[in-house]
Length: 396
Ligand SMILES: C[S@@+](CC[C@H](N)C(=O)[O-])C[C@H]1O[C@@H](n2cnc3c(N)ncnc32)[C@H](O)[C@@H]1O
Ligand code: SF4
Image 1 (cartoon, helix red, strand yellow):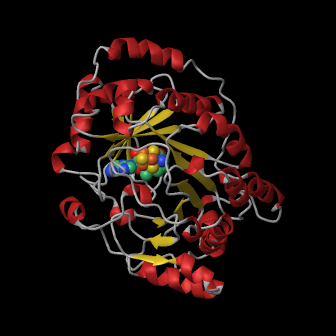
Image 2 (cartoon, protein in one colour):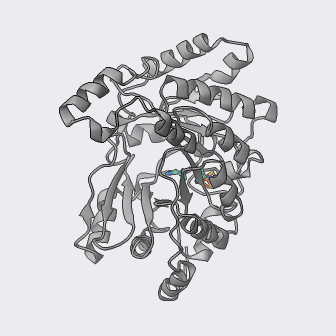
Image 3 (tube, helix red, strand yellow):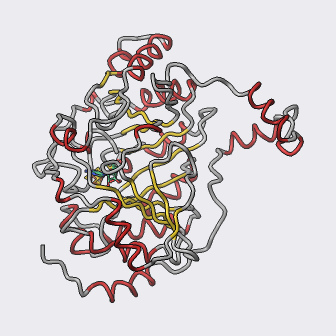
């Protein structure tokens, strides 16, 4: 593909203009307001400072609620993170996500209604899920997405509500999403070259995405995560430009290894591995340092150029899978529970909900599905041969 490389130098200054240091307002502590209030009100619970360390360990061991057996699999993995796809539709057509000819959409009556999404979310949160991410398709084209977030934010025990978005509608919606309780945002952006953007996503909209990123920074989201799927021959020449963005802004640029899904014409040669990306970046910044993992279940390997405000992460699903610490479950827009992104076994929670299964029955059904989760995915070559949904119908 002939992409204008001369954009680069000029693009650097455009970016600096696009990202003047935004006013840093306090935002998202990660704890919903309701929970903060409850924490303040729980007077009889001694504060962390009041309990000395050995006593505190004992206190936590005694008082911590045991994690749901239904959300714990045979390998001891506790699934406290749920991704819900709220739509199969999208206003972009990314090459790596959906086949060129599009996908057959599920009739609306077979998709989860808002009420069904909330009912399922409530059930999972009751069992121990404390983080929910809305995805799709493009979640921000669902007309009632603000309402869904507002309802989720009322669920006691839910600590984080996140969204993964292509950013097209973000600048317009973000103030309302934030008000409704949105804690964290991932914005997908695979290139800093507008012409290339149109080639990759088969639509216009580069400047809207940039506006969305800027709005997230302005509203104080920290970090603002930027998801960049790296593909050979397409955007691996932009790694340095992306890392440079983290110098002045609290961005976490996440380079994602290209994964195989139905219809995306994956092949090994197009995949750029984490090690290769790291080598390229280290040639420019040899001082790049690895940061400790924030959470055991984190899928990202995170680095930082010393003194840069932001970070750089790698999602190494292909070259170094992180199945051992996987804590995620997914619900597709048509209501199927998927226990592994790369597994094709699914169970329809929608059908059980609609046939009036009781809460107990639903929990049992979820427990059986989680119990069947495999230790790890079958390896990149096997999964590239395997039947699975296109990514757009799973929800990344
Ligand atoms: C399926 S999208 C849905 C949310 C939203 N539409 C977006 O693009 O951010 C979720 C994430 O999956 C990533 N993704 C899609 N297909 C992928 C693939 N084949 N390999 C790696 N990541 C992929 C996208 O880049 C995006 O960050
Ligand atoms: S990655 Fe997101 S924006 Fe791109 S086609 Fe898939 S769902 Fe749409």
